[in-house]
Length: 172
Ligand SMILES: [Zn+2]
Image 1 (tube, rainbow, N blue to C red):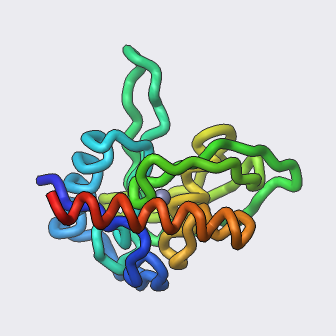
Image 2: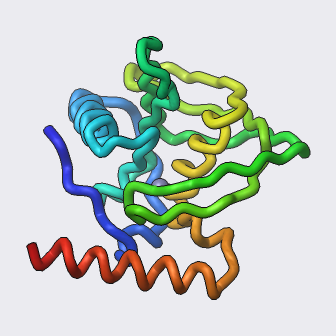
């Protein structure tokens, strides 16, 4: 089942999400809903706060090439345990800030620890787009958006545009 995605500005996007005790059928169902919502958008990542749930759950799949096997990842309580000194920049966007993009610089490689949908402990090092995406999604769990990396002026400009789009959508 698809879930509505919150659009910035929304106070729920600025809150710190709570850790999860364990996986459960309910959480697996929620993760499936989030993946469906993400693929439909379409997007490469989605965090639970973006659908109004303040829980430490993210989903991502950065395989974008036509014909390549999808790799949906579900992460409970994801945590960056190591980051490279080397950085990389990507033009980032966010399903909660539609049609707005900006270059953000982050560590080029990160090692992430998380619990998968079956409750198994996992750890993996990500690079390239995967590294950017996983950091962007984990930021959501801290109430942080990619525009928080930009200058205040740029951030305000994007916020105004997003606010306008949100009002227009609400009127439809
Ligand atoms: Zn986002």
